Image (tube, rainbow, N blue to C red; front, top):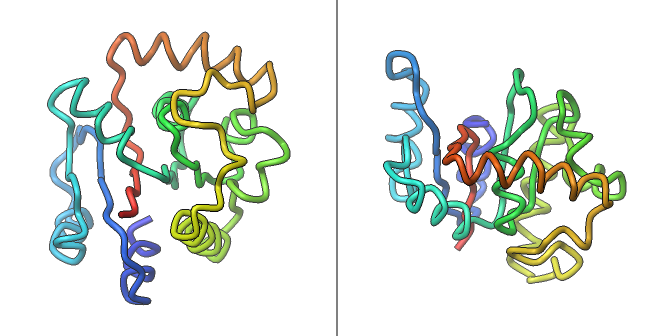
Length: 174
């Protein structure tokens, strides 16, 4: 993920990024490097201290990005989608089940080149304001298949209410 963010920054794309999540190990060197390299592009770094802070990050974001290699359900992704973020996710784990089939090509990637292509496309979509087909912020899921909506409502909202705060990156592009 960081390599992709660096590449987009080197291309001159204007964005801000929130690297949000709880760190259970010693501060990884790659994130300290990211902190220095992304500098003013960082809207947030680290753990959100309150549910309100975490929710604000999600509601302010336009894109949620994951490069996870281990995930059971993707609660933080569901939370971000509920808040109106366009997901960019690996085509593995539980992610294909969370995203309607007609959105797979726009949201799911197979490799680094696919990740970059979707990030660039999402950046352009946002810049051109052409994502009117996306579910609206706070949507109850009427744009998504009913099975996906039920899953989000059953798992996503209940986890949100418990205060689950995920470790995905939200890419607010302003």
